[in-house]
Amino acid sequence: MSNDAAATREFREPTEDDPVTTADRPSRGRSIAAVICLVLAGVLMTPAAVAYWGQRTLNDAERYVETVGPLVESPEVQDVIATRVTAAIQQQVDVEAILTTVFAGVIDDAPRLERLVAPLAAAINSLVEREVRAFIASDEFADIWVRVNTRAQQTLQRLLNGDDTGAVSLQSDEVVLDVDEVIERVKERLVARGLTIVENVPIPETDRQIVLMEAPQLRQVRTIYAFSNPVAQWLLPVVGVLFLAALVLARRRPRMAVWIGAVVAANALLLALVLSIGEQLFINALAGTDFGPASRIFFDTLLSYLERGQQVVLWIGLVIVLAGWFASSNRYGTAARTTTGRSLENLGAGLAAGVGDGTVGGAGRWVAANVAWMRVAVVVLGGVVLLWGNEVTMSRFWWSLALVIGLLVVLQVLVGAGRSREPTASLDPGSATAP
Image (tube, rainbow, N blue to C red):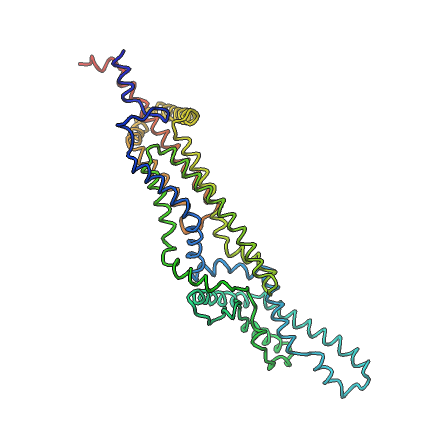
């Protein structure tokens, strides 16, 4: 019995409650390295997420246009542009003065002339506004919006690199958007409707622009961009490598997985706070400008990818915490893991016994021999499904999580099917006495 007890102690899996002997103690350098990797990953994760969003959205013209394209259908954005264009035309075309001049030689009675001119002027101004809003809601304007935003993205790159030319430019401490093309198209529509008085009316340069925001710190932003842009695209992969290194270097990996999940979830909450503060600062920056009423919808649309990613990252962190707890050697984790594993293996054993042709058992034995790397492959597959095409959404997260859990369940069932006959073979007395 003493030899059996010694063998049991020798081959028993260590638990977190076991004392750590000198021979089993990992090197201090390895433990410190794991902690350093975890801390560095935690510190860099939020900046890396913002940098990745910038690389994905602001530096890529196609993705930028895909992101801001829906803004053309926003009533707030349409109202801002329509109001500005209408005001620019009406300020330069004094319809009432023109009508007064036209009818002065026909009607000498000033009160009668005023009663005639005022409603006509109001009707013409109303026509101008209707034509502007009709154009803003048309497919033609949607095409212009795509072209303007393509140029805007290119100009944003020029702004950050110090070039102040283009549809969006920096003038003093203001970022302005040129709407010259929209004004010219509206004038063409009005002339086609018979309102020829607007055809040759010059629109001053100041009325052809919409102030997007006050940006006295843009020059400092340019300096930061110049230093950060070269490394921004690699920052998020580096964070992933640091988390992986922390897990590999850790002696108690389930516990480290719990810490990693907690750090990931905490960064997701921090990013939510940053986005909330950033939105308020953005709205305050645009307050008092023509674009102020549409500032919130613009911010939410521009950062929609980052906001969706924040929600997914939070849930990923919580899932990692749960997985680490499930794999750990604490009482509750062990009980949950043992109960679940035993139930699935019993299901597999029953399946193998029910089929009876040995096919399921053979496949199960192969899976049992290779289950470790297959579990890793399943998790990697889930990550690929989640990140495929850079379209991270909550629905895709749940689908990828369901895929991972489903495949892990199948693996455990097959493990049970493969192990179902092992005890029978070893305990069969006929195998030892057979001729």
